[in-house]
Image (cartoon, rainbow, N blue to C red; front, side, top):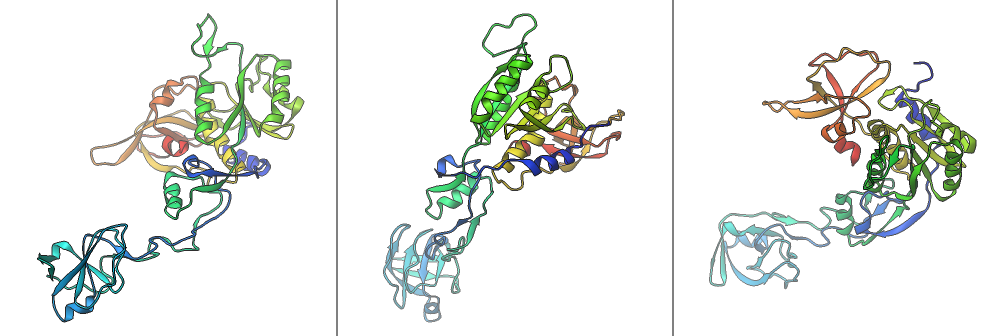
Length: 403
């Protein structure tokens, strides 16, 4: 395995030399999901802004109940309205979310009340502060709601909207060139001739990039020619932040990507100690980040998730970009002793007692793209390790890798 780079070492090397995107843009909340927050977001107000009722019932002064359990109903307060000051011996009919009237200090739920005409009898004693949502209970004005570098989720956007903010400062979109190499490739929709295959890698990777908020500036199929590959990389580099290719990074006579990159820049690493994904390459082309993925669909997909995606997010200043798995029992065995760390496609299930387990997909060939649609995630098998049924392996779900 001489010359092959372990995944952890490759990630460490990559993170040390990634160019960073510094430009910031202001964007409406509805367009911010999945984008990276550029600056800490400080709450401009408290939530709730005022103390309000936590339920339907009656607002009152708790001290009045020491005198009488029967109070006069002075008003009716619905959510969105403002009631009058509550006086001694009075109660206000109030509904969930309605502003607590001045003078009141608690709410009694309607189930513990008997209403007769304009009077209400309180059946259970309530204490000051009961059944209220206090001002600032959820969010305090001036508190840090979100840290810079967070990749914004729908929950985050709801949080920002709750304090009245309609826009956020986020890192601009990464501009990416996505190029596939190979004379045999044609686009779906065209007639397939002998010796040709459809370009599936582009569509899988383009979807992954768009889910991350990237802008695909240039794409296309590059013929298996050193000169054409060199010219394409040279022309596209000034337009983008990152160039991603699939295929052509191995050692075959028609694999020209490695030489083309070195003609326009340099490689930081080449060949990983992982399976699938060994012929992965990374470097710089005229100062722009380059990732060369293998051509087999499983290898391209897996190396993108394990290496490229974390790197792209890191370029945007995102934090917590690496996904950690969980230990899950394997219901399969494997006697092969690979020198490389394996990432097996597996399905995730639970037995009758609710205990989770993983089962290996039948065909683990890196060319079997259908296995990616069947699998729920990847099971990690360290180098030189046999798997015995019942062993616990690190399981990384696609739901985590894709989010």
